[in-house]
Image (cartoon, rainbow, N blue to C red; front, side):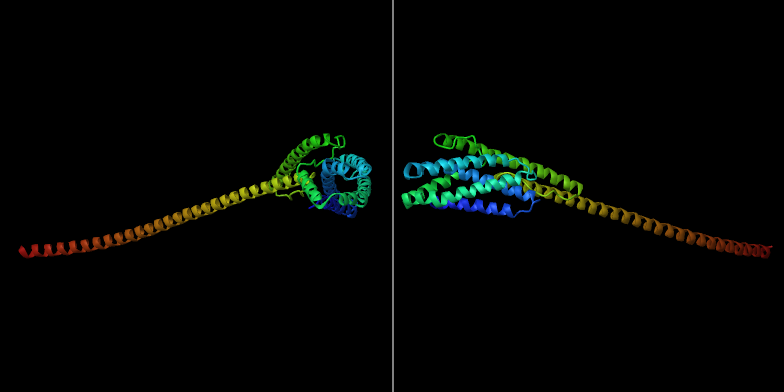
Amino acid sequence: MDAITLLKNDHKAVEQLFRRFEKAGDNAFVDKREIVDRIIEELSIHAAIEEQLFYPVARATVPGTEDIALESLEEHHIVKWVLSELVDLDPAAERFDAKVTVLIENVRHHVEEEETEFFPKVRAELGRKALSDLGEALAGAKNAAPTHPHPRAPDTPPGNAVVGTIAGVIDRVSDNLSGIAQGGVSAAQDLIATLLHTKKPKASPTGSTAARTKATSLRNAAATATAGVQETVSSTRSGATRTARAASAGTKGTITSAKRAAGATATSARRAATTTAETAKTATKQTASTAKRAASKTAAAAKQAR
C-alpha cells in the first residue's frame, strides 16, 4: 500500500468514528467515551507517523510543500491539545461534547487541505516505487507510534523520532497496565456478583484498543476460571449428596433388615416356646396317666398274690 492510500485510509477510519459520535444520543455516555478513546488513539498514531516520516520526506523532496507542512504541524499541535484534555474528561461534563465538536471541525478542515492540496503534490512528484516504500515505512512506524497525545513533545526531526519512539513504548506499557488493572477490577466485581448471586456489572473498559482488549481478555479468563471452580464445587456437592443418600439408604436398609430379622427371630422363639410348653404339658399328662395305670396294675397284682 502506498503512503497516500494509507494516510487516506486513516482519514476514513477517523471520519467513521466522528459520524458515530454525532449520531450518539445525548445521554450515551458509555458509547461516547469508547468512541472518543478510539479517536484519541487513531489521531495520536496518525499524527505521529506523519510528523516522523511523511512531512519530513515531503519537505525534503516535493517543491511547494514547505508552508503546507508547517501549517499541518500547527493544526496537529492544536488537535493534540484538545485530545489531551479529552483523555480524562467525563463524558457527562458540560464541555465534553463541545470539545469533541471543535475537534471534529478542526480535523475535517485539516483532512480536506491535505487531500486536496498536499497529497496531490506529493503523488505527482514521487514515483510509485517511492510512495510504496514510504507507505511501508509508515505502516511499520504505526506499530511503535504513541497511542496518546503528547502536545509538548517535539514534532519535527530529529527530536520527534527519539521522543516519539520512547513515548510509544511508554504508551503501550501504560495501555497494557491499564487493561490489566481494569480487567482485574471487573473480574473481582464478577466474582462478588457470583458469590452473592446478583447480576454482573456491564463491561465498559476505557482507553486505547490495547487497554480495552487486555481488560476484556483478563475478565473473560477470570470468568472461565470461576466457572471451572463452580463446576468442580457443584460436582463435589452432588457427589457428596449422592454418597450421603446412599449411605443413609444403606443404613436404613440395614436397620430395617435387622429389625425384620429380630422380629422373625422373636416370633420363632415365641412359637418354639409355645410349642415346647404344649409338648411338655402333653408329656406330663401322658406320664401322669401312665403312672396311674401302672400303680393300679401293681395294686391289683398285689391283691391277687395274697
